[in-house]
Image 1 (cartoon, rainbow, N blue to C red):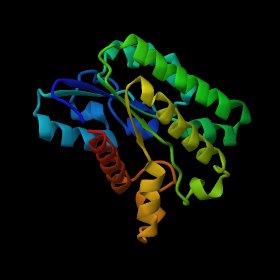
Image 2 (cartoon, one colour):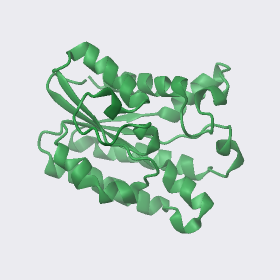
Image 3 (cartoon, rainbow, N blue to C red):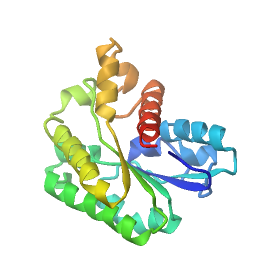
Length: 222
C-alpha cells in the first residue's frame, strides 16, 4: 500500500501522459498529472494522505516506446528518487511497427530493455520499496479492431506478467492486469468505444476503470 511520505512516480506513454502540462515539474499539481488514470489515482491518494502526505509525479510521454523510456530514464525516473514506481509501456512498441516495421520493437528487445530498466531502478534507488508494473491492452474498436495488434499485444502482456513474477524475489512488485479489467467491462455489455474510442487511448470512463484496477492491485499487495 502507499504510505505517508511516499514519492510515487508514474511512467509510460500517452495513456499515462494524458495531456499533462510538461512545464509543471512539481508534484501533486493537477495540470502536471494529466487528465487520465494518473490524476484519478492521485486524487484518491491525496484524499487519503492529505496534501503533504505523498508526492506524486507523472512523467509519461506520448508516443514513447521502451527505447524512448530508456533514453530518459535517468532524468525522468532515477533523479526523482521514487519510493513507488508505476510503469506502463508497450503498446507503441507494437503500434509503431504496424505503420512502419522499422519503428517496431521486437518482443525480445522489449523484454530485455524493460527488465534492465527495472533492475537499474532497484540498484540505484535504495528507498524504492514498490514497483507497480501494468500491462498494455487493446480493445476491439477503431484502429484496435482494424489493425493487426494481435498476437503481439498478448505477447507483451505475457512479458510484463512474467517480469513481475520474476522480480518478486528482489522486493515488492505488483502486476496490474488492465486487459482483464477491460474484458470484464466488455463482458458486462459495455461498448468498447465507451472505454477507448480508438481501442488504445482510454475515454474518461476507461481511465477511471484503469484507476480502480491500479488501486485494487496495490491494495491487494498490502
